[in-house]
Image (cartoon, rainbow, N blue to C red; front, side, top):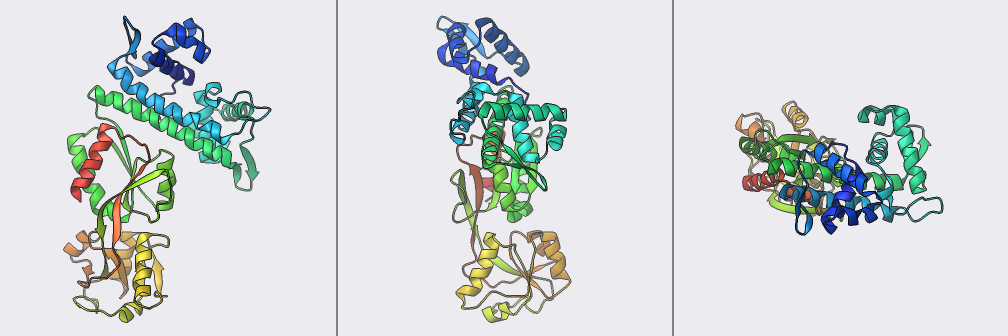
Length: 396
């Protein structure tokens, strides 16, 4: 998490950047001139650089200050979207929510929504549980809404709380991006890269691109998160992931993401060495239907390709199917039986080269999947993140 920067001080810095004067900016943020001067000084001390310099035109951002303030501007835009979630209520104190809330209150609401418990949220934030509870209550009072109900499993956030939590998460993610860009400006390539890796990407694309990235930027902090798409997409939309690499979805599941195709990848029949199908150049759809299969999970592009292959040949999909999303487990099932799997040849490249698995030479019509990257719409990568995307494209 980024430093806990004072939200009002950040808003004040943006007004100074826009107006060029502390005295004139005070009217916009409802702070006295002395309070604003002290707030700006504290903000610069926490960040470790001067944000403004004096000129004949007044206060102007330094080069490094402008880099950071561009990110602050975008982060505040996410908070402004909170107003669209909560229509004006009689008991709401202020319709401009972000001007009435503190960073601590925002962080508390977001974390309680994520954790589903005041106790777990307090543990995550390293605060006392009553402090977190009070921060959420104060936020509810300011917004004029109750954000949580009770359920057998704990707290149940309302849909408004979930929407607010997303905008708050994007606010903090954008601030983190700003701090990392400042570090890059200072020559410290220590920024974060959080990659959501889908099955094909885990075995070849992501490892190679990350290895080359770290050869160039050895201090970059890289996290590779495996998991199903339906878990990775919310993480991307909330700013907890920077990119998802793997099979693209059709239709696109959200207007808030951008999918970019890198290549199309066909699926192949994969079996153990010595399997009756190994080496056969022609296998009928009926023969394939009668096999026992290890199949991809439901609601994945690979499973759709599996189903469509048989339907396009006038057959119903096989019934003797073990669903499995783990390549390691799939390999074990194939080695211990005459089952077959429909996988990318790229995905089992190492296993085939080492003699653990075999790939049929028969081409299966209509099983190609679009492989690429999924980003959050409007997301602007840091230099480290941009270089990873470049490396990834070069690998394809």
